Length: 433
Length: 143
Image (cartoon, rainbow over all chains, first blue to last red; front, top):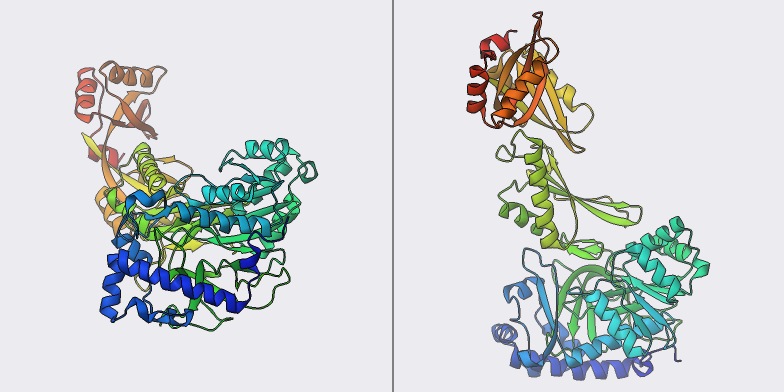
């Protein structure tokens, strides 16, 4: 078995990659112009013709695309193909109540599977391996994204999905899982639960893990590797661009190779939009150059990262990105779920409650927890304990359905949430990332 | 007939109870009876004081979540079965009790219980018809 899933791409020389990117970029720009009214209108306003984009150097002429644009065209307004070509929908949280909806054609699904197959091979996976997938299956891209890659590789996928940790451990041990795929915090939790149950990592066939969908540190990596007796690899992606597998780590474990044949990366100054040279820290921007259903041009990820192009000991020539170091907006990632404070605000307002709240994020053991503190208002205060508990319960259940995340709710006294310059602080993130 | 009780929302954190009662002490408010209902996160402090309107204004001014609630002060004979008889009258009439707490009376032979029925008017009626004495507000505040 090769060290690469797509050797001709993963080790292509720079000239060849630029030629390929140029061809695909030209085709994508034309596809967007012809099939997405939003882009056609933008081009017209800018006085831009598809023919103006010839090479990768012309990328800077293209307009940016924002998450807000997806919201403005909710749900399918930016799709570039007719409905009968779309074979799959996924969705993630939007900044307010509405989700961010993405679609895939048959070929998009194939391309995506290739991305994650490359990631699995880079983590040492082969056709002989059992790939244990504990990412959630559903609208979230994590589960199905890796699943299709495992099968494309010809490995054996075990679609355990998330939750029920003891059963996860039974499957790991009894089914002989070789590679574990989940969020890093869940990997920690599995490792700690194994310890409690007295299951030694030596009793497993686990060799590697592919962990992503939330920020994690190298310290956490060391801990996971020790707990599970494996090598832990990072994987990056976002549903708007494709899903997990936009970038993946190799055995060097020093940043993630971007699948440049499909996504052209840029790092920009988030305030001015100016492109920054490789090695500088800024906002990561991707242009999808193979996607049919939802080809986004210069999509602003809001993730802060650094790009580096230098020789890698693994032999891949694909450019590398650092782990995301933060966000340019106030999005939180909790147990792989994207959470915006504005979503919580709209839940509270819909319930007719106080919009004064604070999100407190903690890492308890290895699992991230969200506590939502809500300031009491005279209207909410009923003198009876059960009345207040009922309010807490209603908030909890509305948050669960809106965020897809279980949060604890705590009613607090008026004016007890810290305010700076009159504006309430919305986030208290106690995790050390 | 109906007594003004102060209901105060307090977070479960060390020192909060002392802070709130200090506000009352500084206005010379005397606490006549109190109860604290709590959960793991918060509590509701219920107070009967000698001067509810002064106490309410002081707490409100200090930004405390406070409201007034009407409750009944029921007198009963301080002997075995006195309490049982009173709640029995209410339950037979189908009146539920949301909460109650005892009042430490300085008069011998009489016990006073602060009671929050789910239907105040009906509670007053059945208790009176059964010869149970309800204390007047002024009587309670200065008991």
